[in-house]
Image (tube, rainbow, N blue to C red; front, top):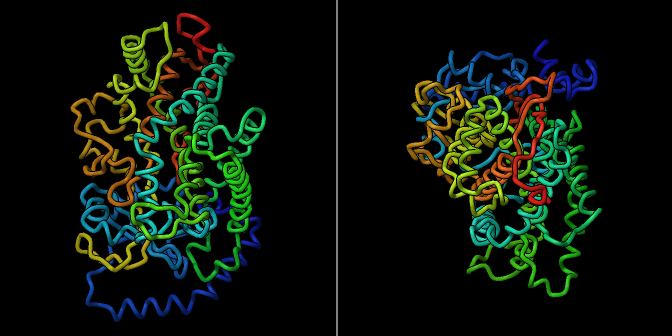
Length: 519
């Protein structure tokens, strides 16, 4: 029961509750399990399922899951091969751990595997799946994707809101200057920075002053809780018949968090609609409201207020932890290898100098920093298992049957550390990308940190700008050191978004020529 306590006890209040839950599971699922067994026996014309570890009756492999799923799945691939199954209650999980098989799922059979197995918490957080992350592949999803890529996250739109990004980042640099010589939590500072950048791009000048600071603090709390619930093991996901019982209370908790977000969104939308004309505003909310019920190049799929809110939710929840964690990992890796950090700073001095501040327009002139970003995302991919896919029809991959409705985990973390694909895969070596071979297009399945195929991340361009501009500003403005008594640690903590297990505490020391450059 050790692994049970590690993986599950946090979400189960008492041993009695755990016993009641599992008794309920057995009662509800016994008949379903027998029927499933009989169907599998009768359907012997299909190729076999992928191999996998033996599980217990009814609950399968649930009790053997390790909290660090990315490393646990990588370990299982050593004994069961690059494709294997896990019985997760009434759900069949299929784990992919090789570039060749990732290509089969994400490119060759892309359309079939383009759906999602939406968790209960995900439905509550996305207005019933009205967002781009959880929406099933089809006309509505294509419409939302088009809105994101062509309208919200196009190069022209991102250029138009640069002043908002710059304002927030300069405020962070000024704050860190005030903390010179004192250890700061880098991840927390970057989270607040990215959060303020994103909310500024969402609704611009709608919120100012103390209200803006308070809103940022509220968002930080809610985003953290929401991300944690999205990654929590939920019996309702593994045994759908139990969903209405919500035995762990995860659905109720997520519904409460989503309601808080909805209240904020309603307020922002109401204010934006009341602003005089609003035509001069250049923020994402204005773009979305202009598109709602308006002409969209002949697209007849309805674009509703729930779609507006769901896309706002995607931006806030999906864009904060991801970028801030990557910047934190990058700085930690460079502090662990000071010669790399020094090389980036020398590049910045050559391009920008010490007598002015770095601008976003400078990042295209920083090729070595770009290599650092690529290597950070190789060693520490934002979504270590991507967002699980779900086949819309039964398929055959590598000679194995993959049933319709299975949950497909692509272990990009393990693929990025595969010694057959990478030399010295555990070392942080930005120079490995100097040949320009690797990019974020998802076409090479040895390196695809943002996913691949139809479901590739829609926010790659914004993530790239935010990472490069944020890290360039931190390294150009300050030298960084570890406080006395602190140890630089690079250990990871698994979640739907990969994090550092221990926060990076580092001391900023100003390095620019004049204090006015920090104002």
